[in-house]
Length: 213
Image (cartoon, rainbow, N blue to C red; front, side, top):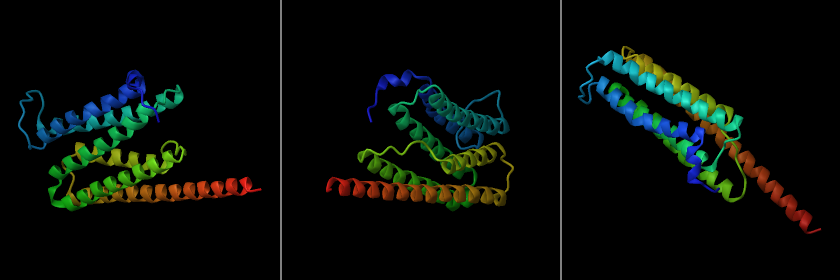
């Protein structure tokens, strides 16, 4: 992997940087709408603040889809993008989950469980990815189950952010769906990594056997 900082000027990476910059904006607007911080937004009330927070998250999700599509469609995939794109994704998820604890404090344990699951999943996937890259094996892009879990996450949190009238029971169900989708995605990725490892080991043994002939 060779990171060229000049690649930051390519459109997919610009969109990723925009997604990162949207994170503090989302946090500020959401916490203001939720009453956790005081700001002088004369033209917005609390309800419009929630809607604005959800709109920022929708924009974040759209830039996430756009940068991936543009990178693949116009052959603009870069090593820099491979680093900052997942960083932006996970930073966004972490910011959203932490902010939702302020909204749904009564079920903070469930939200903390989602945060912990996402954190463990990403750390293990990072370790596995580095291990494969050191062996010269490219894992490729995200799998369909990873993309599905991300779509479910964005859809659920946009509803949770934009609709402050949701009951705790509804929130519990929605967080349960996110935890389930994330866990299943995690299991599927671990199975895929195991399959690739077995495939690599088998190939190495075959090459070694042929070399002894």
